[in-house]
Image 1 (cartoon, rainbow, N blue to C red):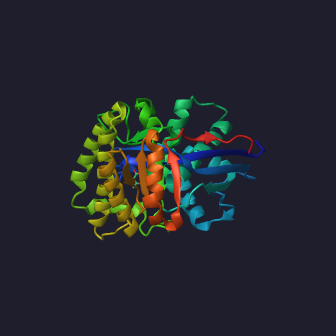
Image 2 (image 1 turned 120 degrees about the vertical axis):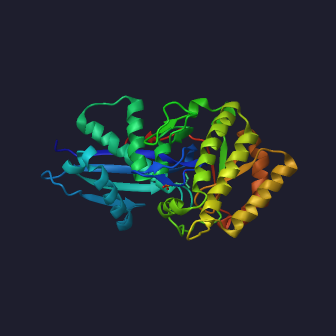
Image 3 (image 1 turned 45 degrees about the vertical axis):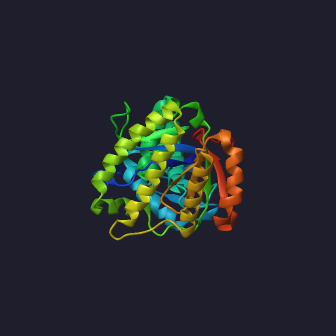
Length: 352
Ligand code: PMV
């Protein structure tokens, strides 16, 4: 085994509809189940090149480049992650790793860059380990394994390995749901949701002030935590029914409640923090007025950041576009926005 091995995966970000916010005891175990749409235009592309070590050694050898530049901060994060999974990947002992990663969107801007980055990396590792072992896995088992390791890297990344939509976390509403891996739920979406639009209005692309890791840990002392976890369980059930039926109104009501609850939990954490920007609130006001005035099913959600994810059916794109450019663009940082939609999931990039 003396030759170099290489693979590239493009893996998308996802937008949570019912949010994961808070962990249970254990390694990256969610306090409540979550569901997300998989995105298409917001993705990470990661290439891992393996070179055999001259001799097997315990030291993990890694060089990490982000956007073509060596990035020590990420490299150290990844080294810590690899230490936790080294027993499951013999390649970490036998090979040195060269990792190149790029994002199609600004990282740490509230667009879940850790989800796309960690899922792309997990897919590369599982793919290369499979090549080394010479035992091709069935597709479902491969993606389940990738979801597991993506989760260990960043919880929400577990959901990014599947097309259309995925649920992560145990719920009685879905057979096969698990705290350890996400499961695909694209098949149960009504056709209108399979092409749902998600325009991301960039209120600010600055790096966020509080990491998700800290945010999750503050839930341990949040006085509303218990109520929140029960609410998420119930919202997930209601949302699954709405997604099956094509009920855009129930969908939107739940999704907006989830966004506002997530940010309310941040505000009443101790210490408290705010990730919304003034322009986030200005846009929320306008979206709600537009919906009241037109009766169109245009709703928003927020991730752990100030950017608005506008969600609406493809059939009304023209009308919503007109609204976006007339009313919302002025509140975006340099008019920046990303027109995204429910996507087809990760893919291996060939000919790299
Ligand atoms: O995956 P993490 O640890 O970055 O947490 C993500 C948390 C939210 O994005 C706010 C919600 C979610 O479920 O994606």
